[in-house]
Length: 221
Image (cartoon, rainbow, N blue to C red; front, side, top):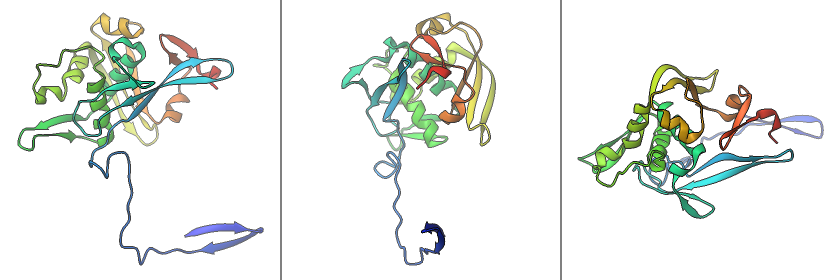
């Protein structure tokens, strides 16, 4: 039912779907390949008293195959040299219960878990923030090469699963390799990595990352 207001009077219009035979809906990739993928990502690039600027990255590839490029302003970039993308990739890999599997029989990559989380795992492989040499890996190894390498750099202490109340998932980790924290400019201590609805996550934050600096969220515009 749809309730509308006109000239101060309430009128009710009831619509039915009795004669509808086809309903089409779409999210990124679901009608074209039946697979979800990340096409863009954003990080805070600059904060001034007047405006907050974001850096936008475009990602190629629309399937679960962990193959694609990352571009910024139309130019391909290597994520290994961008500190703020390191931490993003760590979150995509560690704060995630899904995985990608290469089906030898079908000769295709398949998801294990929720499509949205699988899309983030695929993105982590495309980003390759650790700079792995993947040229000699098999297709099955390519499915999780970067995620496996990141897993070895951290020790998981606790996991807070996604809930409708928190609208987020969190993992508490301790870095086991100091180089991973040095590269992305974070301290070598316990970390709580979180992924979830931006509004719910931001309201629990006191600071936001801008490259290697921490900026109070109160300054955001």
